[in-house]
Length: 205
Image 1 (cartoon, rainbow, N blue to C red):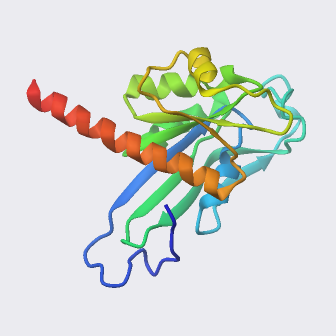
Image 2 (image 1 turned 135 degrees about the vertical axis):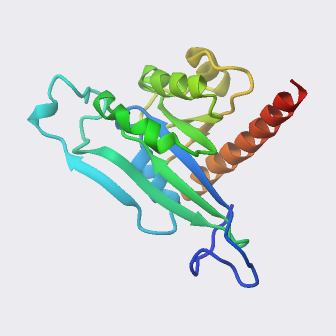
């Protein structure tokens, strides 16, 4: 999934409009969504971060992210351009419940999604899993391991989140480009496969 610097999103010899796909990066507060987008985007990510203030006391649970000083209030945005000219847009969703009204707008037209999970607080990603299941949006779960966090294998994470057998579960480090690349490859592959099965099932009705 290597990307190349783009010239208006088109590779040499490619004509016509580029193929564009949109992937959402979701998950709980402070799980690493902004870090993931920044690790892979070929352009400087668009970020809508604000400083955490006393107004968030009693609203935002920062017990497991004590060092976090900012929070995403709208979205993160990044872009990857492929040699073919295809574009992959990444939209990181806000993690706090009071900003969830943004999700419907961000999800519109999405090919699929990544639910980023923190193994110290897996329950924080239940809302994301439920959201994409209800919308029938293909998604993968990527467990982002922080230094000193509990280590679980894929089967344990799947059981803890009560995921359907076809939902891919991966282990990742949102700080590392190669690790993020593997997650996005799995997401696009799963989303295209699910989309193809869905169209086939619909045609048979």
